[in-house]
Amino acid sequence: FFLVLFILMLVELTAACLMLIYEREIGELVTKDLNKGLKNARHSSTNATKTSDWDVVQEMFKCCGVNNYTDWQNNIPKSCCNPPCKDKEPTYYSEGCLERLKNWFEENFLSTGISVIILCIIEVG
Image: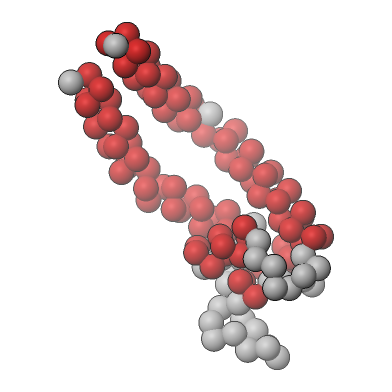
């Protein structure tokens, strides 16, 4: 039992170290994945009532597109609309979701690190 917990703790610490070492590469992968997902959503959004993952993210983080609302080209979803949303001249969130996600991860990095440390202490204890 101790050996299993020890190995689990080593895996957790290794994953944390790898995330710190390869932070830039992980950021690039996330950016590529967001751009690919936006491209797929942009081309498949023929049904306006369909809720996509992008709608959820954009409403939760109050952002639009990867960089800004122009990423959606001419097919900007209503989830990008900064309330109150007017049909004739809507205003959109100016900040992209990539920047908002980065800020969210940076804000929660400390609490996540503390949680991992507490989990390691519990596993050892």
